Image (cartoon, rainbow, N blue to C red; front, side):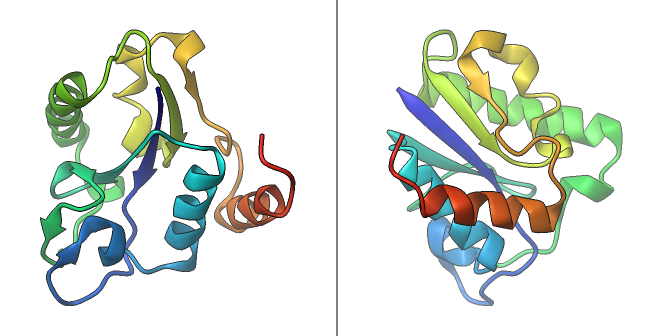
Amino acid sequence: MKIVLISCVATKRKTKSKAIDMYISDWFRSAVKYAQFLCADRIYILSAKYGLLKCDDLIEDYNLTLNKMLKADRIEWSERVISKLRVETDMQNDHFVFLAGQRYRENLIKHINRENYLIPMSNLKFGQQKQFMKQALSSPKP
């Protein structure tokens, strides 16, 4: 199976919403479209507050990011995410695509075989990521 993991973003709705609807930035909307373009079997959201979210999980607005967390807190967060990923996915055989920044993936990729994950925008700055997804979405499906 192809699993796409998308990081949360700061721009959110102010009311309780499904996770897929909570994050309203252009980048996040593009990431969801890109995941669909990749024919993802499952899309999950990496939330700094809630950990691993299914798209239809109901969540409240929050203000938290891994980018400002201490390393120990990020490790604890990743252990919670890995625990849920082990239940939701086949960590040994599924293929993972990370649409997430370094802090969101750094402690997760250690648990996945190198051959089983991709980070298509790993070296791109924010604006370049948006351009990358825009170009990909305008090309034929892979």
